[in-house]
Image (cartoon, rainbow, N blue to C red):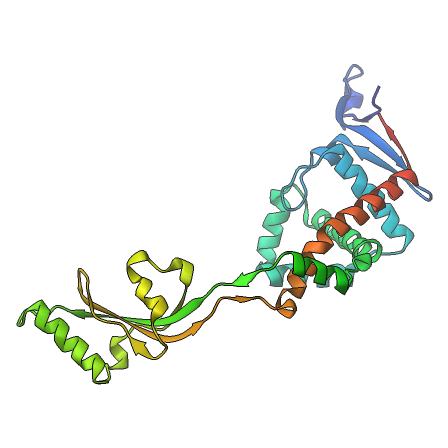
Length: 282
């Protein structure tokens, strides 16, 4: 049977028969090496600062990690919490009022919210010390992954686009010939008429614009009749399909390889904490 935290009304002495009421119950007791911690039903039901609800196991692991952080004296002082709060505000563009609203929305007072941020800071620092510092990926493993999983940079094209409106004074055939004659003789088309330059991957080029692939840089396409007028493309530059270099993929592959390693080390750390403590569920 769960132990109960019982509170009586301040005025219960006026009523000999006043019944006590239960506001919380103890769900588990964590016996650490130097400290014993109670986990109550409210601890489990209360969401985190970001509104996430947790299981009893999640809360127990938080308590175990906090006990471990205390063991290594990884606890923030008020100045550290203030600096941490400033970082949170700066990175998320939050005002002090936004922080207060965040705390109250999660059911925390300002002081309780600060205390929770202190817990988050301690656990994050503990994870840096016990887990992340051991996330070492060997270059030979990165190379092996690179060789086994090649990634190619697709061919792409830098273009400018122009549509010359129809001239109702002459036939469309004559207007088209006139435009193409200007292009062939090298008569410059004013820059202000062209769109801004843009890159497009070969895979994204529409079926009716495949001629772009065979164009040479610094050339202009033939005039194509579209709904609004005659369309032209100028190819400014192009990149061939090529293998992405080892250097450019090193960080990406390292992150890929770190993920299973992180999960392995984290699971080992959790088991270590559980085995070194005693937990009684009530």
